[in-house]
Length: 137
Image (tube, rainbow, N blue to C red; front, side):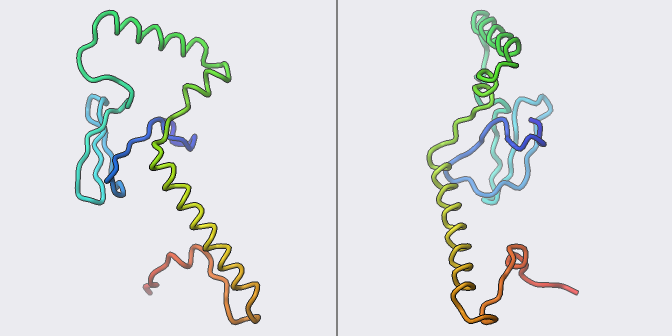
């Protein structure tokens, strides 16, 4: 996928998946191998919607026909939107929304503390400074 566009081509997930540290394509570019925080290696299809196994001649021709149609009409906005859209699982979407609400809530709480306290008692902490654990000289 074009990494500068800001959107990934496919969404890979499992329920118990932790933070992913490394990703590597196999030599035939059909699979991805990911290493995550829970010390597991996972094997993913490079194209999530592609079927594994032998295709019949009819399936192969239908797939080629669909690909040529998409290529022919890719300049149309509706076709562009459909080909770019990816379904995010409900659990992941909900977790992302909850995390966003929690972040906004904590930022609002910090700004209210600064706003309603005596001047100089509560100081502003930038987001970059809160992630710094320790400075090493």
